[in-house]
Image 1 (cartoon, helix red, strand yellow):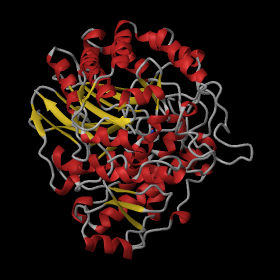
Image 2: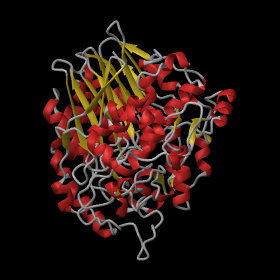
Image 3: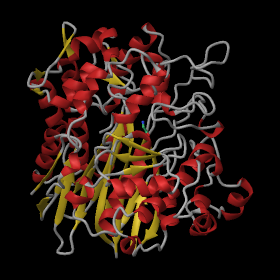
Image 4: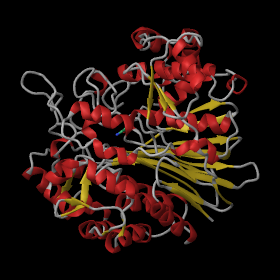
Length: 578
Ligand code: GLY
């Protein structure tokens, strides 16, 4: 579940969040039983909400392709999973066209407003102002969702723009039934009560909507209709004006000029080989692809299968590789438009080969002994280069694929809705290193490479991935979960490619996570047997058992040409196929 330790970190950062209510979200371990995947032969959509998966499926059945279905699913998620992602946020996607074999990556992440400064969230004494990068209008980055989805559709969609937005408009206008999960997050996110527009939408006179109630979002339906007519209205038209006005009235700094300037960026995906397969994911300003490939390289040819699934040796290898990758993340990763990120070096097999000897399967190292790469070494290896969140995965009948992760960052973003629009605004500015070595919402630390600057994109961990084998689709997926996104994606890939699990087992399997700082090997509670945990402790691992995390979606191509899909049992999503 996205909430477990990120709420703990958040609670340290700001008082006043209703942590007790989160026990509602910590149920039985979702992976007590592995789920059975959905199977289909034509196409499939897997996402974090059944209505969103249905929206994508509806569009596929109308003859839409993977791009159409991804756009429909994303807009629908913005309505039915409002706390995780939406029009007021941003994200990343990969799209692969089977006919040409081409994979492209789209960055529609939020950008820092032009008025943002390096010390935006510090007081005059240089101390971090608690909660300033998380709650309220000042926490908001310039949203990219509408521009990103519109660009994808304009370039590749088969159906009309109005057709792919239609399901989302329907859900907003006619309402949908509030789930346990949504009700719990509304209750927990008390900042919503301080913002009149958010309070009006998500509570009934200050009482949070409860599970089973019908939630109608009239303003959002109106906004979606405007976008259906003209997506640019979000950036230069009446929606932009409403956002800028709301910002100006509430000490926010996103301006009309920021919105006017916003552009999504098509980027080359990062791809690398692993066990006869080709793994592609997102380049910076996400750290996802770099570290996914780096960890796979560090694992290299190690015979994980013979070691045994979740054996102490296999777990130690994965945890130690994660620790090295996250040490590099903190030092080197940032927006490539502002800092030189040594991507080629970090994902090179040569670099992994140099660092692999540091890994001792019998003895974990404390994180203060694990250093980021030596900059001189990285320079030598750098060949010249050609240069709270949700995930959805779509595969269409032609085996074109979209893997898309988007977010407004924390649950309900900044906790504010731009008055009159129904749009929840993100708190993505917290993904910058707001001060050196100051943990963000997910406990991640960073340095100059990820410092705030006007127009800069905050570093992300989002890791949408697409894996092919001999030119054919093999699997695609991704997850929310802040810092754990990279390691969740890694484990989905390993579970399928190395351990031959089906999509249901791969997504259900208990997870581990190490992010260098804090120096903890996190294990999903109840997912690992006591002997294994004791052995990992004996090897020096500072174990922390936590409630489950992530809310992945995954689609796997099977050898008979069919599809298997699954949505994470830790959440409430579904895979829907035909
Ligand atoms: N907001 C979480 C991430 O982008 O990594």
